[in-house]
Length: 536
Image (cartoon, rainbow, N blue to C red; front, side, top):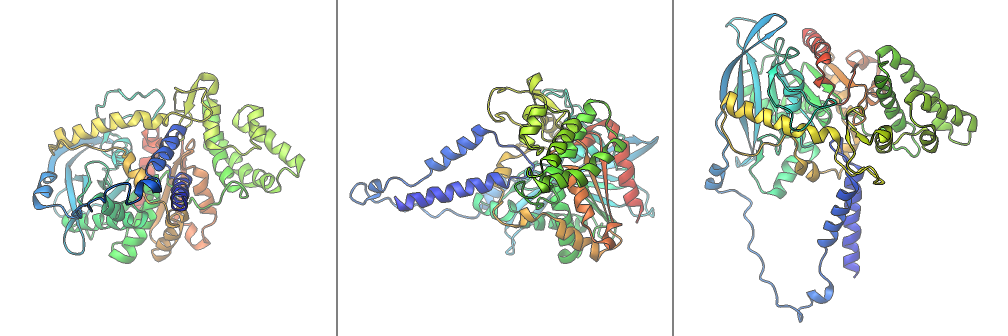
């Protein structure tokens, strides 16, 4: 029994670590946790009596599995060759002629054995020979386990699809329209789908796939290599280069920039981080006030938006209170009753929440508890990505959230349908392989065991800026986002050395994690991106 107890302890420790360190990709309902526990227990060794040599015949050792795919197996899963199609779009009254390309970058190990194929979608403006060289922007989303479809069709690509806004449904039409907010008028664009997302695929067995692709540092290294390979393949090494990353892509961005700069010898001229998972190492909520400071302004912004009062000016006193009296009251703790009572009254007024809920929370608003509470009377559940985007709560009497996130529930179908149709019909890159807009398998298998992910990407960001004083970093957030709240980036900005501060700017928009999906934000985001590129 000692061996079994040890296995149980190790299994539960791994489960606890996995759940406590999950990124901003998804929440884990209670039923998912229970299913995982059952799975772990079912995987334990049989009772010792059943393993005794007298009670069962000796098993024949299984044949050693091959770690390489045969040439025939490789050919069977070969993705199509690169395919391009000419397109046009009118932006700001000017007609742009561009070429849309769907292609792949082959990855190999140090012996030349194929390990993976990374798919990309690029949009390159047609221009006359002799014209100034065009900048090129590389885009990655997050998860881990998200393809680049969200930045592509939701934010800056030449085609647009509405998603992640209140009232959207999974069966909404997936027809694409021209995007007036596209960045194609000032930079070419390359959208990269990491291994396991989109049509990108590993060519090695599962164990090696996890080692090569589903871990923070190898992920940074191979995605950076993809950018290097694309630049060489398309003769663009000498052009200005930019990188944009959303969510976990906001963790990838600084680390990829530093790695390419210091190891691959490719320097980015600018970095854009959209709702970034940038600095998760601020501490825990038991002693540090910072986790509560990060979420309070986003919760307040959501309330102001419901009151039609959300503006940058309205948020300034919220931020000032959070950095001042709120933080001080949290540090003093309940021993200072007057400060605590005043803080609870202020938080109740700022958020519009039930006074009893705020009082029993001690003014420390847990995200999951808040999302259950804020729309409870309407029988709805809010999204961690934008708490004002709701769906009916299918399990309203459960003690914890049992359903998936409302935004995640509604975006997979339309984005998958729209992107696959664009790739296979508009561009003509024919494949019947499955496309993963969101891969829960990748997210589930991601290695969160080391310190690298918990430390965040701020150290790499500082080193990259220090090494290149002309490189600027633009950070953009939605006010209502509780997955990667804007306050985390503001506090990160506050802690930057003075000599780096001028290279780093933070801007907020109405909306949540995918604030860019709102048409009204497209022009402002376009202006910020264009200004960054024009600095060089």
